[in-house]
Length: 440
Ligand SMILES: [Zn+2]
Image 1 (cartoon, rainbow, N blue to C red):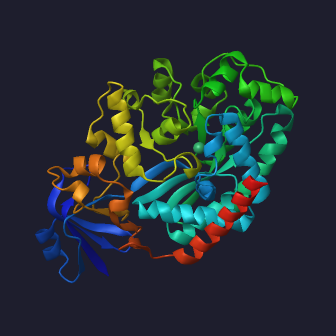
Image 2: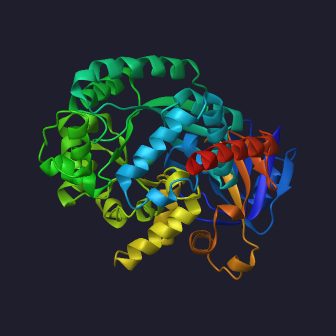
Image 3: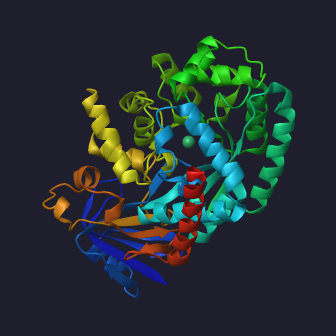
């Protein structure tokens, strides 16, 4: 059964915009794309879905998130000026107060938020990888779930990698056409050098993708360059030995072999021109998370420099514990304005390419991951140029349709794959538990 989606605009991104365009979807694939009249004539028995004054484009990609933490939206506001305290409160809440079902509910709620905002693919770092994977599959969201690994103490590196392998084996069993498994050594300040080396080797030998946090904060920079600061003090308190490599995060990750895996690196705020060249040479990609970075006061990554240098850069919401929304259109607007405020010009087209992690593909034979954004809002009218309207005047709340692998997972204000009312009630239960913890 072929379905034709038509709208005022179709933006394939990789090719020119089509006015009064249409996309024909057959099963999981795009069967045709072009002017509406041509597509309707070519697929004469197809069902036609006319979306009117809207724009159809490839699905948005959230290149860095932690859906399992969705229930912590707004929970850590008081700690946001102290990154060390923020991480500690988050870790305690997750490890000691969330049941596996709480985590599953939290991740599923996050996946609903994602598809509502036109996100069709996520790079999701998760401590409870299996729960996150099941959440993505339940909602019908495409993505890679990166099983996290922690361990700053070199004496426990081997043991921690064995634990990672056990978790990973479980994830690999649950892989599907939509959801794959990857590995995520959490960060340079939570994973020691031998463990980073072993995980990089594992990723290479098993053909797994690797995502990690990199060059995010001043505290991380101080730890690596000088062996001092909040993270170093934390290590002393826990009797963990740490010898500073006396170099930037990016050069350190190159030295321990992480960049050999062509990783996806979240943040990359504290990078110089030499680091950017290293990212390009090694084929590393960057997940730029400007709203999370700004909210935690970590600074701003050189988005325009990444683009100019030819580094593949996408946009990430990070967890909603530090954002507080998972909305890649909003992220794209913020990234663009922030760059321009600092004197670096980013065009609406650049921003849209980043929001689709390199452009996406709306072309015949490609997988049918597409969205529609309505253009009829008062805040969008008049518009003149659909790309500028998307980036500067729209948000995820203007999305009216999300199709992943040919399946409508969000349509007319409703996620079609799960019972959102039941989920909302469970999320409120978790909220009450956290509120009580705060009161105690
Ligand atoms: Zn993160």
